[in-house]
Image (cartoon, rainbow, N blue to C red; front, top):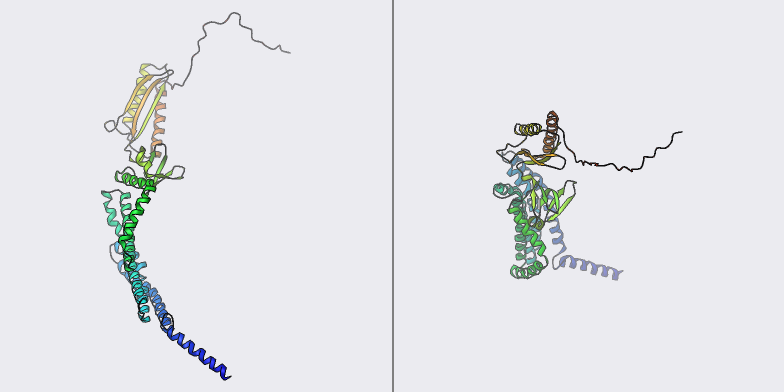
Length: 380
């Protein structure tokens, strides 16, 4: 029995020694207390977000401007992480670490602080982008969107460089290595850089914008949905999206229908050859008067407008109608064309003429004398 008690006493002394020696020379009491401190600050984080941030939100809601509401809304997630960083700092301070763990703990806290600051800057780009978007008068909307994206990327890269510097990692050799790596990548990713440069040129030249109806010869016709760094998304009229490489937009002819000032109507109206000259003049003058006196059509002093006898076709006398509508909307344009077709039919019928259609006359000069009789079956 005495032996058992001696062994138990030895085991208890071992437990006390482990408790005091702990983890890397830190007793478990301090470790547990540090974890408790960290847990307390996690709870404070909820209180901080609920009460302090809530009070800030209520305060800015009473102001007339909306920019402060957006700033607080953007900063709430990164600022809500502040109590956690403070908790990590106090927990590590309570552990009373020694080298090399003291340097690691300091670098960890610095990394968290830098991450918090750059996260706040990244979040602020959204609310502050309204000021950048005011430059749309000079630049295009797509160019300002690209500029905002570049600012985001720059913040991430600078933040990553700051974190690496905290951990003693030199940026210079990494940049030199990336330079050599970039040369190798550039040789293998020439198409990507071609598309990137083409996208910049397309936006800088203001060839198209999001929402424009375009036709890329031999590629696609539809509405522009997004202009990316490598490709542009064009949604066809059957609602299928097409990702067009930006080089296609810079190298091919692009027709931007949304940039039209007017929509054209060009018809060739065939009138019967039996029509007299007076009837042709009545038809021509009637169509011309309708176009000139209708507000749906652009006047001749703005655009070219012609209603003329254009030629003598094989089976018709052709009248060329060439005019432009004020609207560029496709549906409205179709409505105007429909009304014009009704009016032209009324004018032609009122003039006592008619529309010609392709026909062929066959002249039989002589009936063969020895032609066979037509067989007629006998009746019962």
